Length: 110
Image (cartoon, rainbow, N blue to C red; front, side, top):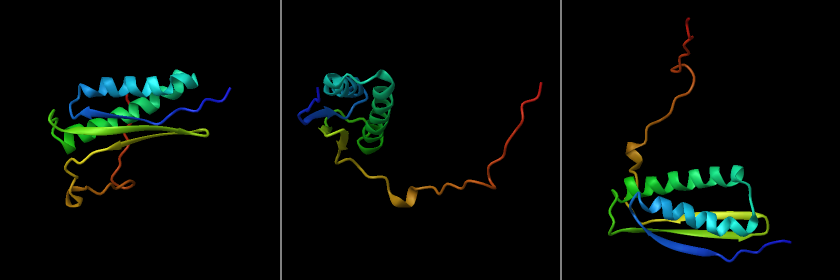
């Protein structure tokens, strides 16, 4: 049987405590699809990491502020989107990442 899930949205306070609620909301949304934990866990982890960045860096963990999550399922696709109006990271603070010559390897010695 093919499941069709209705889109769901939630507003959550910009506090780290909201991550538990966010995780439960994701799992509740996905429950009818009977997906394996091996599929759900990485999505849950990435979602909570993105939300924690919003909470800490966009809002400074301010409980008077909120962010929104939208869960959407269409066909075989699942889309989870976070929305916020917090402070953006200034482009001037981005650090370039250099891979190659600056990376050194070390060997373990016994």
